[in-house]
Image (cartoon, rainbow, N blue to C red; front, top):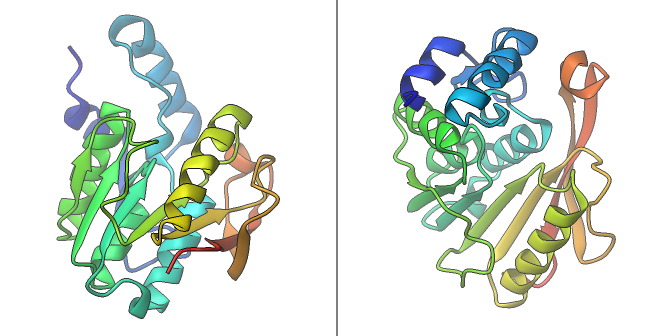
Length: 216
């Protein structure tokens, strides 16, 4: 069985996302070789695509917003949903959160979050399961880049709307994905996030931080 921690270490370098230089992450140095590596291991060991190896625009925007608006985070219990690299959750720790959890269904993402949290001396508890439909035990939920596929966006959107209606603060970071909800969101900030042509077909994406109406 392929060791996720060893795989993440072997296939990445330590670098800072352009919008959040305060944080260091294990990131892919070259996109194509890493995708090829995961495809090679997919048949042998069930390795999913390495979404965890990139600092996606939505996560960068959320992280930047939290570090610049610490009053939203200080003393609060935070969930970084579909956390990927764990960037937003690590930013929440640095901004003064009381407790941070990062949820992912990919064991390689869990490994990346664990390594990235250690790299930044940030205490992040990982949750390796699908938490959609779970009742909220958090004050703030962060969701970056979750609207790229219709079924997921619709399912997650319904859950996030319920959390917000129940009083949980819900922030989304989105660079104009196709399935962003058309209602219920209010813009908080927008950023130009440098991106890779290999990932986004452009050198930057305008990315918006949204809050679900209804949360405190």
